[in-house]
Length: 378
Image (cartoon, rainbow, N blue to C red; front, side, top):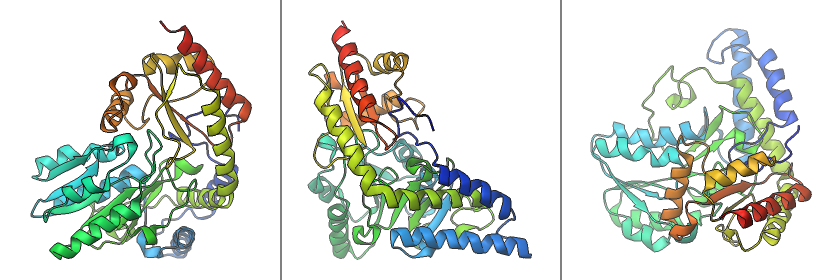
């Protein structure tokens, strides 16, 4: 598949050949509704559960903790909107650099009487002590994404979860810890059991699977979806399952995990090469340590949308912010403000994100194009 000049894999990846082949095969053979009782439906149901078991095995978790959804955004929605069904509102803690699908939950929660506490993330990292201080007996949910989609920083999720678990002992009341880990799956190691999170969200199109399908890892019996539908997926996600999409996602995940070490080594070389080629007219905002090699964000004196347009004219696809927002640049600036990035670097920030389809040659060409454009800017 032709992807020359495409450096926005954090927004979406192209579907792999294996994922596409699986989609077509399953759509043709397992076409019946998995919820029906006749043989064709039961055949589809058995295959659906086989896919659930395979994904659970890949993540070393129990199959009944995997809930298929329409993507990571819907998985996040299920967790957060479950709070709206509770009779007594409490408090929610989120980081200020969450994906927009979580940040935008704040309005609905506050209208329902919940208090939303937003933690700053200096340099792209949540300070464990800030989390400790924010916890109160009214805290019901903590949500901190494992790998930031805009800047690429990696949080120490196990350490943050331990703080929450220690606080639980003082109150005797459970606190749900959720993490949006969709940028991490298939690229960097994930160990949900050792992390001790209650839930995590994932989307297939981030690891060369199809769009419109993902899953929620959930161990909590207290999560209840606002949308009941037909009771599928343990009542957490109603509607006929997208079996072909789920199977395609499973194929993509197995492939991504099998190739993860090789691809990560390749992407790390590209990241290093990009950093080495970039000149002083561009400021690198993604720290070298404790960050994903798949994402690097840089800033120049030019407004981000101008740099993006000029790079597009030269054949490069990059992002000025999260593609999941209708106002991506504004959301990107908000994240950088919560990271305490200097004001002069916020408006010119662009995100470059790699995959194994990118080459060293085009990576150098992209860095040089940024150098040239930044030098020529007034």
